[in-house]
Length: 199
Image (cartoon, rainbow, N blue to C red):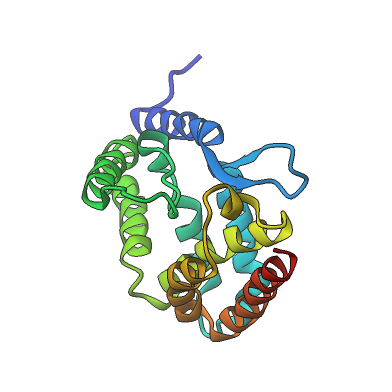
């Protein structure tokens, strides 16, 4: 039996390492309430969001958006998931941890291949291209919908206000697609209005 080439061994090692993303627990709960989602599920769900919601971002290269979404949370294998609504987080320290994770994880692949995936991650983080803005907006939209579908979900756990949701999620979702932000705004306002009425 012939041993795999060094390049193939590195690709297989990278794919084996990605298995760990299934063990990174996020704050958002599954809609059935049975458990929290993991980062691998989140990335897959976002890829589906890109396919289904592409008509709301005309001219965007959906294939590239899917690539961005599939690589965007790989760094969480080392750096973990940091919920946006936790107060007092050190953004510089988080960025440092994520950059170190990106260097290690994408460095598992052969040179140019690892550099390509690292460049995709950097593009997502910068959110300057139309594809990255759409990907970043979807990354904010998905947890909003999960919280709405679980009657407040982790918003209630962390006492997140309507103003916080609008301020944190509005700019990236609107930058991705004004249509999607208009729809999300209506749903968010209706949710919090119902909460106020019940109080």
